[in-house]
Image 1 (cartoon, rainbow, N blue to C red):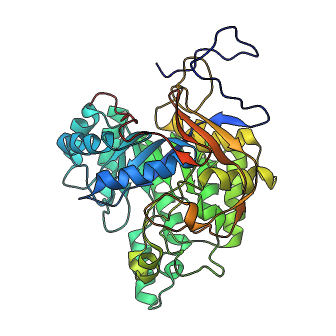
Image 2 (cartoon, rainbow, N blue to C red; image 1 turned 90 degrees about the vertical axis):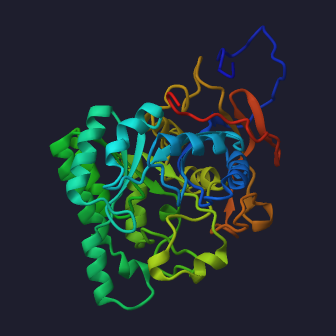
Length: 408
């Protein structure tokens, strides 16, 4: 049934296939909580290419944000889930929303259909007004749903635009925009008690605010994008244009420390498969939410986290597998190697490779990590007991993945 039957030093029974992993690190499959698929008309083809790239990166489960589609009702959810199911090589789940004043009354309908996660933004283009955020929190608390929040203050961004006419995204979306939004949302969480997951935190102050909230035992969790651990605003190249923008080197180091301290729960790829030329040509107000990264999340964390001494293997697994599975309700089916859990495994290759666009599988055709040397690329990725990637080749089949909705 695709589950781990037994974990033992020796086993008298023989499987259909025996894999020799001696001398290699074996970890649970990566659970990526932010995979963007920006193709409303050709989503099936994009699902096929990007989940193939995910399998090559050791990702066995991902939570999809189907930008720019809006999942505003049960029928939207069913239709999108069907398209994903027919093309995905890995297991997927879906975030509903973004929530707006026009679809708040359909939260229960969507939840009953199977999605536990609802996207909220505190800034344009999908800003939910303050009073409606409180309403969403009230509904989420009653349902037991998770609110996945993009936190930047619309007011601070507007003020920054009035003062700055340049093209520097970091000036147009300053740290204060995020920090004020985080502070405001935490105050609302204290009042309403809803579970809130902060996506793409970028600053030291934000991490300190979350640390304080956790000490108060508020029902909050948070993620950082791997790009915000890899790059800083100093000397950023034109195609490293994202929102929230890259921050200072000091903020980057603070985020690494926050992972070690347990303040930051999750590191996601925030994968957005846009061509390099497209990103470079975008105006400062049009920056995408992420960059190509699903295939390099695991090796980056292994090389720059584990091998550089910033974290242990156990802490890496916690950030890219166990905590994502726990927060999004997949645990203990996902995120852990134990009997009766799904047999989602990654066998790592510790040889060093240089990242190059010619070896990547995503439709974007490039990587912000090109030229970097990393180890920890998967030798083999196994999904529910089936090998889907082996020794440089994607061997999984489209439609081999499941859609993880609890009733749809």
